[in-house]
Length: 145
Ligand code: DHK
Image (cartoon, rainbow, N blue to C red):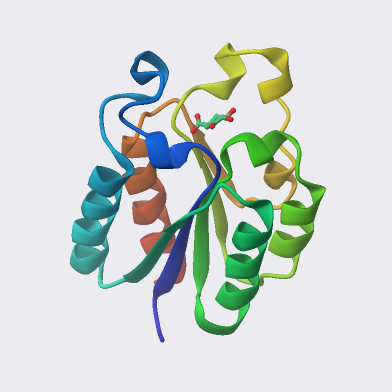
């Protein structure tokens, strides 16, 4: 399918809106998905939006994206800082990969400053709140044009 983008979300993001709202904001992941769906329609893109607390599920979606998707937007959440396996999976994907963090990870604990995923990502957005997903999707539309 032309213009299909996977938007993948890692652990604890299912609690968005209820989890440390002073850091991650009041929007829920369903709100984020809805915003992404509206923008994707306006940009002529299709999206598949997924969240999992399990590393292997995120890896399996990256593998699935290899066959059907043109781009990946990923907020790996805590797996950002720990997962060589997710990095390796993303290295097998040929299209653009954009990494999103809701919070400004560089303003937080030092263990959040390093990202394995950034070794593959074509662009990184951090600290723009949930609006970061929309910015990433706009950039993805440009890259896939
Ligand atoms: C989300 C998380 O769950 C954290 O583990 C990351 C990221 C930051 C975010 O800002 O979206 O360190």
